[in-house]
Amino acid sequence: MTLKLCTILIFSSMLSAPGFLEGAEPERDIEYDTKHERDVLDFWPALTSGEPAPVLVWFHPGGFRDGDKSQLQKNRSEMLQAYRNAGYAVVSCNYPFLSDDIDHLEIVKHCARAVQFVRSKAKDWNIDPVEIGL
Image (cartoon, rainbow, N blue to C red; front, side, top):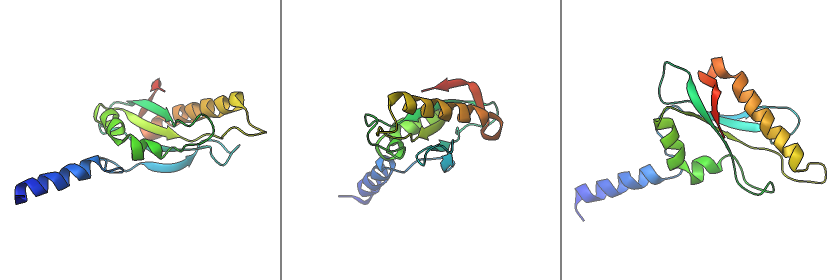
Protein backbone atom coordinates (compact mmCIF):
# COMPACT_ATOMS: atom_id res chain seq x y z
CA MET A 1 0.00 0.00 0.00
CA THR A 2 1.37 3.39 -0.89
CA LEU A 3 1.87 6.12 1.68
CA LYS A 4 -0.68 8.35 -0.09
CA LEU A 5 -3.37 5.63 -0.03
CA CYS A 6 -2.58 4.80 3.61
CA THR A 7 -2.92 8.50 4.57
CA ILE A 8 -6.26 8.76 2.76
CA LEU A 9 -7.58 5.64 4.51
CA ILE A 10 -6.52 6.89 7.94
CA PHE A 11 -8.03 10.34 7.34
CA SER A 12 -11.27 8.79 6.01
CA SER A 13 -11.59 6.59 9.08
CA MET A 14 -11.09 9.63 11.30
CA LEU A 15 -13.92 11.48 9.55
CA SER A 16 -16.33 8.60 10.08
CA ALA A 17 -15.26 7.89 13.65
CA PRO A 18 -17.87 8.67 16.30
CA GLY A 19 -17.16 11.95 17.97
CA PHE A 20 -15.12 13.45 15.13
CA LEU A 21 -16.96 16.64 14.29
CA GLU A 22 -15.69 19.88 12.96
CA GLY A 23 -16.49 23.19 14.62
CA ALA A 24 -17.17 24.44 18.09
CA GLU A 25 -17.37 21.91 20.87
CA PRO A 26 -20.80 21.29 22.35
CA GLU A 27 -21.96 22.44 25.74
CA ARG A 28 -22.85 19.22 27.53
CA ASP A 29 -25.22 18.19 30.30
CA ILE A 30 -27.10 21.47 30.48
CA GLU A 31 -29.98 21.12 32.91
CA TYR A 32 -33.24 22.17 31.24
CA ASP A 33 -35.37 21.45 34.30
CA THR A 34 -34.92 20.31 37.89
CA LYS A 35 -37.78 17.79 38.00
CA HIS A 36 -35.69 14.78 36.99
CA GLU A 37 -32.00 13.88 36.86
CA ARG A 38 -32.31 13.03 33.13
CA ASP A 39 -33.59 16.53 32.26
CA VAL A 40 -30.33 17.47 30.53
CA LEU A 41 -29.29 18.31 27.00
CA ASP A 42 -26.23 18.95 24.84
CA PHE A 43 -25.99 22.03 22.60
CA TRP A 44 -23.92 22.33 19.41
CA PRO A 45 -23.79 25.88 18.02
CA ALA A 46 -24.31 26.47 14.33
CA LEU A 47 -21.11 26.64 12.31
CA THR A 48 -22.13 29.97 10.83
CA SER A 49 -22.17 33.27 12.66
CA GLY A 50 -24.25 36.40 12.31
CA GLU A 51 -27.98 35.86 12.03
CA PRO A 52 -29.69 33.68 14.66
CA ALA A 53 -29.57 30.06 13.52
CA PRO A 54 -32.47 27.64 13.14
CA VAL A 55 -32.35 24.74 15.59
CA LEU A 56 -32.79 20.99 15.32
CA VAL A 57 -33.89 19.46 18.64
CA TRP A 58 -33.23 15.71 18.67
CA PHE A 59 -34.80 13.26 21.12
CA HIS A 60 -33.02 9.90 21.16
CA PRO A 61 -34.84 6.69 20.22
CA GLY A 62 -35.43 3.94 22.75
CA GLY A 63 -39.17 3.51 23.18
CA PHE A 64 -39.16 5.70 26.30
CA ARG A 65 -37.31 2.87 28.07
CA ASP A 66 -33.65 3.39 27.17
CA GLY A 67 -31.24 5.44 25.09
CA ASP A 68 -29.22 8.56 25.66
CA LYS A 69 -28.57 11.95 24.09
CA SER A 70 -25.01 10.84 23.32
CA GLN A 71 -26.38 8.53 20.60
CA LEU A 72 -26.59 11.53 18.27
CA GLN A 73 -22.84 12.04 18.23
CA LYS A 74 -21.95 8.35 18.53
CA ASN A 75 -24.35 6.87 15.96
CA ARG A 76 -25.49 9.77 13.82
CA SER A 77 -22.45 12.02 13.60
CA GLU A 78 -22.91 12.46 9.83
CA MET A 79 -26.43 13.79 10.36
CA LEU A 80 -25.24 16.06 13.15
CA GLN A 81 -22.48 17.46 10.97
CA ALA A 82 -24.83 17.89 7.97
CA TYR A 83 -27.23 20.03 10.01
CA ARG A 84 -24.40 22.13 11.41
CA ASN A 85 -22.89 22.57 7.96
CA ALA A 86 -26.31 23.75 6.75
CA GLY A 87 -26.30 26.49 9.41
CA TYR A 88 -28.38 24.81 12.10
CA ALA A 89 -27.64 24.68 15.80
CA VAL A 90 -28.35 21.22 17.22
CA VAL A 91 -29.68 20.15 20.60
CA SER A 92 -29.72 16.54 21.80
CA CYS A 93 -32.01 15.85 24.77
CA ASN A 94 -32.44 13.24 27.42
CA TYR A 95 -35.78 12.68 29.09
CA PRO A 96 -37.04 10.45 31.92
CA PHE A 97 -37.89 6.84 31.14
CA LEU A 98 -41.20 5.09 31.70
CA SER A 99 -41.64 3.96 35.29
CA ASP A 100 -44.36 3.47 37.88
CA ASP A 101 -44.24 7.24 38.46
CA ILE A 102 -43.74 8.48 34.88
CA ASP A 103 -46.00 7.66 31.95
CA HIS A 104 -45.87 8.69 28.27
CA LEU A 105 -47.77 11.92 28.90
CA GLU A 106 -45.36 12.96 31.62
CA ILE A 107 -42.39 12.27 29.32
CA VAL A 108 -43.99 14.48 26.65
CA LYS A 109 -44.18 17.29 29.22
CA HIS A 110 -40.46 16.93 29.91
CA CYS A 111 -39.71 17.06 26.17
CA ALA A 112 -41.89 20.15 25.80
CA ARG A 113 -40.00 21.74 28.68
CA ALA A 114 -36.72 21.03 26.86
CA VAL A 115 -37.99 22.89 23.78
CA GLN A 116 -39.23 25.73 25.97
CA PHE A 117 -35.79 25.95 27.58
CA VAL A 118 -34.05 25.98 24.18
CA ARG A 119 -36.27 28.87 23.09
CA SER A 120 -35.38 30.75 26.29
CA LYS A 121 -31.68 30.53 25.34
CA ALA A 122 -32.19 32.29 21.98
CA LYS A 123 -30.02 35.33 22.75
CA ASP A 124 -27.29 33.44 24.62
CA TRP A 125 -26.97 30.77 21.91
CA ASN A 126 -27.69 33.01 18.88
CA ILE A 127 -30.59 30.83 17.76
CA ASP A 128 -33.95 31.65 16.24
CA PRO A 129 -36.64 30.76 18.83
CA VAL A 130 -39.24 30.34 16.07
CA GLU A 131 -37.24 28.18 13.63
CA ILE A 132 -37.16 24.95 15.63
CA GLY A 133 -37.46 21.46 14.19
CA LEU A 134 -37.84 18.25 16.17
